[in-house]
Length: 485
Image (tube, rainbow, N blue to C red; front, side, top):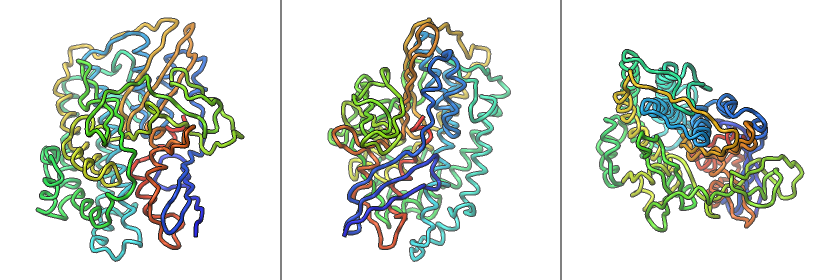
């Protein structure tokens, strides 16, 4: 017997999300993902002075505002032709990493792991320990993570003045120079966060985690002390529950490249990873199109963001979400930490994805590996700062110009496209990570990454909010307020 189930709103999700599920024989047969809220930031920007974007755009989101600031600043920098001095590059990377790593910590301890303390798992041998560590609002490690996150964000206070919505990120670099004494204090904050990760999250040095080069190596490391550190406990329950069988991705992942370096390269490389080919391909941003067929937005043709349109059409036939359907070369892609790790050649994640694809298990594993890889980079960026050198270059924007700003937010590939005419913003379009992952069907009827990942998810009798569905949804770490701009 078939049935239809509406799941939502979801708790522990940034923004409003609703999922419509068709269920038959205890499995999801079809899903439609609805971003239920319209915000209109792209419309707010039209007609304004270009630098207004630096104030308005970060307010799209309170948890990834630095990522939005970076993308906006890069779009204007691209339009003006200004270059960022090395100090500015390192400082912006530090702020971006501060926000992204805090988001990974929040996702693991506050959004994802509490689901394993639900009564449905009460008979599992690891339940008591999971409950002790991760119970919502009460878990010992969850509470410790909140405290560590709070202290970690003091870095943002020094570099950006405040968080969220710092205004120190500019097209020409960072408006806030770092003094030599401040650098020492910032290094102390980084090492304090490192101590929390090595003691609580991993139970091992970060370099040991980053050096794991295969699932076989991961399994040996896990078996050596199965309960030491929260990564090992996650691996225990992931294997017990078969999380690798839940939420299979589309087989293609997209990264715009994370943490741009002074020479123009990225600390975590850009690229499109193809599971079928087993290799990385270059990113062709010219092949991006946004399809609004099933969005409550005007427009029939799929448009490149540089030509994009955001005009509400509430009664549009066939519409079921405020989110457009971004496609790359006409294909569905997934984005996030797993995309960055695949594009940058992290051997453990490549080995795991080669075996079982992008799924609940590999997405969470990729975030934790990214924590271990990126924190040591922040130490390097801090030591690379030259306090007597410039942190900022002034820019001069032409009256007519176009620019694109690409970066990696915690949740994945983020792009801003701006067109300036007669000194004012004519068009501003944003494609956020959750726009990719939580997209609706396109004109061909092809479901988005999450919609397809939910197909086949088990639904137990009497479940009105299926726990497997929640695991899959949370594995993508949605940010719905960014999705609907």
